[in-house]
Length: 257
Image 1 (cartoon, rainbow, N blue to C red):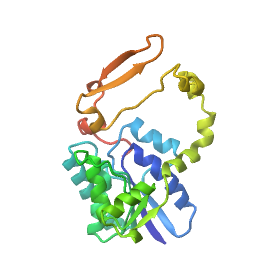
Image 2 (cartoon, helix red, strand yellow; image 1 turned 30 degrees about the horizontal axis):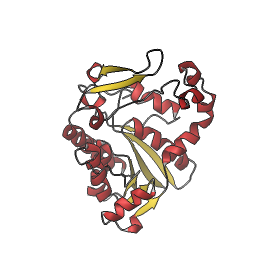
Image 3 (tube, helix red, strand yellow; image 1 turned 30 degrees about the vertical axis):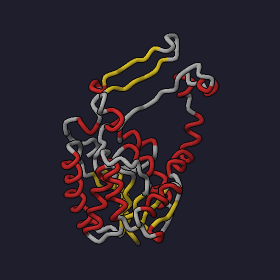
């Protein structure tokens, strides 16, 4: 039986790994192992997602935590190489574009373990973004590239990637949504928050917006929310320093060791 490692590093990864994990668990040809690198470790950034997505406790937890890009990437490589040498996976599936994605891809490539990149081929064209560097590195060394869209295929073809390495599987976030559709539709969250769909479309109320990633927040270091309620037109500014992004917090032990 083949052994597959699914790399789960950060909040967006958990949502993409979940439908793949549940699908693989229904097969009889592989044994699936979740490897949590610990890049996101806070309860609200990790544990609640594993619970809501009905994922098991990670089979391996690297507990890497925060740090500079070099510290985080190097820490994941060192820790994950030890796991690979001990557990000997037949395949590694990495997800998205975080530091752990590139780090685990490099471990697999150097140990001659086939690497699959889920959500491959996405590009911003901006190499000042750490995520863009991670995408380029991962797609250059992965053996199989699972793309979400036609433009991702085109990006890879433009970079000279052979067509036989590219497999368009679609947007796995839709699978995550469908997996949770009943719970989402049964939730009263919209009513509690006053987010009536009709009122949002009519611009009577403003939807909640999350603005994250250093590329979007580091220049001005501020998050902006537009209030279209009683004080219509008023702009509220909240300093991002009130809640430092995960990447900039001091290192601390990971949750659920």
